[in-house]
Length: 527
Image (cartoon, rainbow, N blue to C red; front, side, top):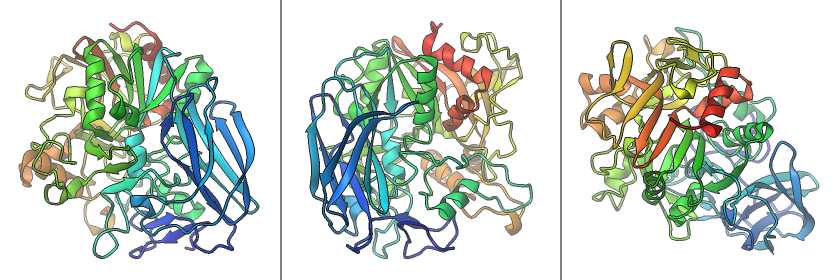
């Protein structure tokens, strides 16, 4: 299958949409029509200087900056001078190093939001984005964008934390990724006909991944449905706007930079795929929670520790290689699982739940034929008010809100009710309102229906990293997970954690009980 647009095959690409390695990158042919750009920072405040670096085959490009929303609000439209510049082979690791093409001081009257940056020349158009945080709180709720995960999945230029062009043979994932590059196609805007990730392949057949089949055929990043503004936060934000729920916006990088980033907000909101955090990000969130903040988290997969460079423009995560490759492997800043004994900072201490007790649901052979929603165990909890659901009903099954990665916790059942098990690392009370099974293991009956993508490797890694060995006992523990909807008390604050990436699918589908629970959490009185 020929690749579309500016996509190219990696040196070890096998041509398969799932296991293959292909990526988008600028052409070093100066005659090919193209224009690309990136901002000098991920987030800004009014009064700060916005910088845009760009390259193009044309002498000038049309620039449109717009605040994204139900109706996009154009903030600036102009023509800028551009020139051609080559793209370094290591652009995804060390940045593109393109020339400065435009700069401006952001006006004080621009509203907090996600701003798209659209560049157009004859024959090509590309999009970037930046976040404008509020100079001081305007809305009661701050949406904290999962930018650590955006960085980890962005594969523009060839490398991310999953596949890449690094290492001695030029085929390893990148432990270091740069923000000084464009966002891959699909991260800023969602393709209108694109499928989401959850998919139940027919039993006893090799599982397929329709979203990755679509991406390779259409010229879209294979990670478009896994991360980025368009996949999760944008549809949630549009739903909030339509409901009259005001939001201010900031990034996880802002939590890293400023321990007071959440000061003045009574509530914060996290949505979608929320996998990568730095120690400093957690410090800021923990301090705000302990002081009385309330976090509404409709997201899943709280898993990896990262480090950021001093300028916040490079993210580091050695992941499965951390024990041998990370220069900080002998410290608690090792970029591995939060639940790794060496790190010593259990994920549940912040969020009440953890990715290492949950992970996959609704795709591959990982609970793909499960209910697709949260089985309700405490229907009288205030979270469920007005939903109409009772004990044993399933919340969100019609729209498949339970997937594709979820967070859970070890639990016990007493008289039909789930309770968190002892020794989990919780720092306060956890009330489980609903839960469903999840797993790290893509089961099979033999080669004919085995999954080459997930397979058994994730279960084996969790067994080794968290439990210290791989055997039948630890593989069983690692592969029998769950995803929870729960309330966690931490300090004087609390976390509502509907720990699933795909919660937003219920809002997209306008599934009434999912919308009701979302309103209860965002706008209601807790407790």
